[in-house]
Image 1: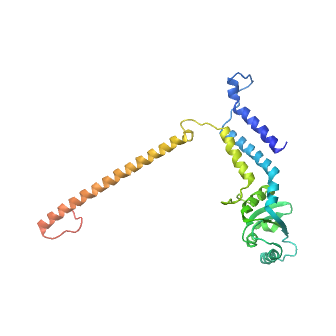
Image 2: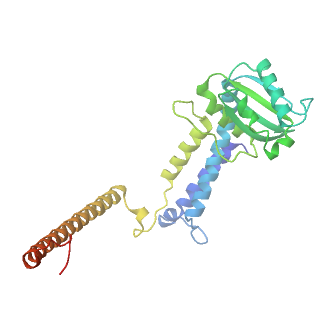
Image 3: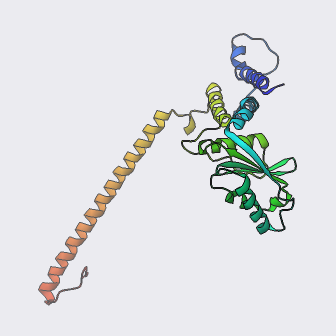
Length: 272
């Protein structure tokens, strides 16, 4: 079963389970209790449908979009007469880069035979791949593929598509997207499908919880809290100012009394 067919089947199944109670209230005869669906099951089914849609977009347009963004491909083998040690391999890679790579924007992929280890990108030349030579997993690397990208605008999109196509094992985060750059079509479709599914299958919570309140009610409540806090702050500042004024008056009156009795000025805020 292909991914588009699996998405269609899963969507139909989720819709039947979501509306089974309504169907039985309208006269549908069926054996057994009404299938219950809670938040955890609903989110799990939605994520499964999103994964089907993502795989469908990747197999349909992912590879073609990646090939359009890449201008040419080069390979470098770190274990074929490239010297011993990290410094020797760095010098060899720098020389190979100057002789074979014409461009600063490219995506590099580390391979351990047929297993993808790491995918990265750079817009500053050969120095970025050399930073991974000291990683613990570099000992198993047998090939480094370099995909030269036509333009800096398509660089984040090419890295994201490479991660989806090759499935690296050592990448801990997704590709960072930048403003005014081309978006990954696979990730864009994933976000759109997830938002649409959550709109079609909302999970209603109890009215006592804050998440079930409408957005405008939550905003009104927040504004009321801010108003009460500001009013309380003004009353506190007013009480403090009145207290300081009364203290200053008491100290002034006692200072005058001290002068009339002793003839010597007391220290500031002296109490009798």
